[in-house]
Image (cartoon, rainbow, N blue to C red; front, side):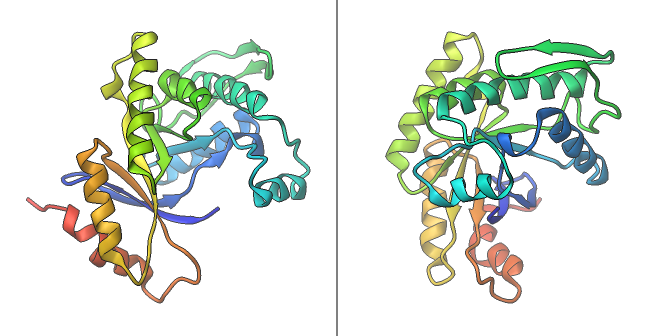
Length: 235
């Protein structure tokens, strides 16, 4: 996974973390327990990031699946699996009694999560992706939606489509924070700042900053001073 910094907009906190997990890499019940542990040891600071995975046009993604002995499912299967996984994970985080789940992709008997996460009802769920199929899962489950940056016009159009999918199921689109992943240029930090400002004007209020390797000494401080500082206010 690519190291990243997640930064919220002014008057909110900045947090260090990792890019999202691809759901097929971990079974939902195990992933829920891992996330719960992280939320507990961090004192309730986890943002739970997840995606569908299975990107056949990205050779490195296929190599990762093969290296871990995991099935490389077609995209429709991966999205359906993601939808059911999030249903199961949310139930494990919130329900007090064991439950069975018999879905199309997942089958659990006597599933139960204990202890529960610190954050209630559960840690914020961030789903990454831009396809129409993933956006429907976002509308149903997400607290944050993350899209790769680089094309603000496309991101804005995808955001409007997400609004429509939320309306179709009776969910307030404002309940989902719009997040963007941006690659950082060590040589051109001003370009990153300009991109953040433009995206913020378009309604994106959460940013994940990808830091390319090799990392300079003191890279976290450099990002804080050269990229994030302009967007943080102090009272």
